Length: 296
Image (tube, rainbow, N blue to C red; front, top):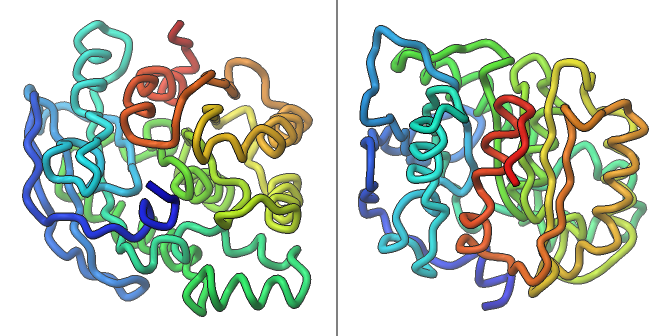
């Protein structure tokens, strides 16, 4: 299916089922910054309010748990991956906060807003009008996460609220907003996982948008001493567009001082741009952004 359909396909509102743990939904979570949306919080089977838990915020929250409820019948199955790693002692106790997207606004909310200043007119105007539905919304989306959602999660659930135990993850445009989040709010997020990051920013190969992201990252990547960043790409379907920009991003991150304990970038030959392929390799980013450990 085309990237356009991936972004705009309708998604059912059915409560997802999980193989372990349980989901608590915060329905149509209100915000002064963005449109209300569902928040699906996954709690492990042994969730104990007397314990404290790492928190992983994930975008495209309706695609995370149960393939029977998603538009393409594919899912990350993040509950299974987290449970396996926690039970084997490879991951600290973790809560997942699945933040639903709003399909018509997804591109606008996930496109790193401050990068637009490096895109010259008339390209910038066309991108905002056609690609971002007339308005850049990423800064407000991050304000929603940081100022409204995170405080509510920390009040309602037994979390470790500090930076070292708060992470963010997404794929495609969700990869862009994840690296943007850790760069804009380095005091909030200690780890970011960006799978199949959509550096072209549109659905066609181009130079203007990746160059804008390169310029932004050179200036705004957070201090490597206190942050971990995971990136990857496949080589098939939409991921084939990332063969040029991703290695250049890797150079930018390395020049910023990130060593192997704080940054990893992987290529998965033949991997496609969908939840099935992301779920196959999910253990790697989960473990890395939480502890800096690698999974073979």
